[in-house]
Image 1 (cartoon, rainbow, N blue to C red):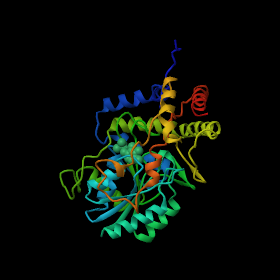
Image 2: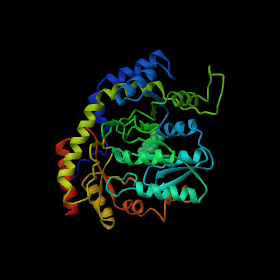
Image 3: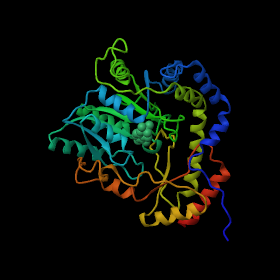
Image 4: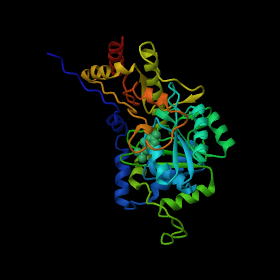
Length: 379
Ligand SMILES: *Cc1c(COP(=O)(O)O)cnc(C)c1O
């Protein structure tokens, strides 16, 4: 007979809900009552609060993180013949929106310790683009698992090549790179408020941040079917990309707890680091950079990963694999070019990564149970 184990959640949204108390319920009900479900006052309120939080001049809220990325590429007029360099070890949306606008994603490799773009591979991707007769128009960097990419180097390459930088910060809103807040890096920054992201709503949501007045105006127009002076004038091809008022109301309340939650995530990450660095490869930190720990991701030997996960699962501890297959090996993306002769690091780490439960409400006693089980499985 085995003793039944209490299952630990991978992300504990219920604990956050208890802490928020009735505030979110009241905010939602207020919208239900006032009835401005589309572009109600909470949408503008949230945009102002987000701009204040991250320091961006303009915040354009939108329906999800994928639309946030697309708004930027559409507003910038990307087109067939343009190459966009991006990592392969990321969520599909990063490259998907490049294909939407008819441009060509060129996949670059990442570092195995931070999981973020490797500038050497970006240089190789530029060579690949030119060999294919494509114009390198943009670079999309991803702040994977909540830690900003190494922007000092990335920005230098973008400036030299006259490419614009779009920061896919879907996992890193709230993070800080060398004194610069996410939301103020690149020509524009896109984020997601999917429930499992560090700042999530109760459905789909997203936002774009930019300091560029003209770009902001174009994105606001594209968000509502390319509208002009009024909503029945259409001056460009757009989309229906608005954020629901109810989601804005939820986010206004959640943003109040967010600084505290970021601290709690950092505390949990430090406890994992200290307890696990001798049995697994813990995530590397970029100097002077604060992650928001969207995921806490270990690397273990590829052949040990499945048994490791099974043993944890038997102890009631969930784990997740982000990402089991890099995009350049996915059916939908396999025909797009890769930098140089391939992406060996992305292919290797896809077999090694494993993410542990991580959220701001991870109690020390629960985390100690996870740590003990991870150590038992790997020692
Ligand atoms: C979640 C995510 C997206 C897309 O966000 P959605 O809100 O789900 O559309 C894009 N890029 C990365 C890196 C993500 O993690």
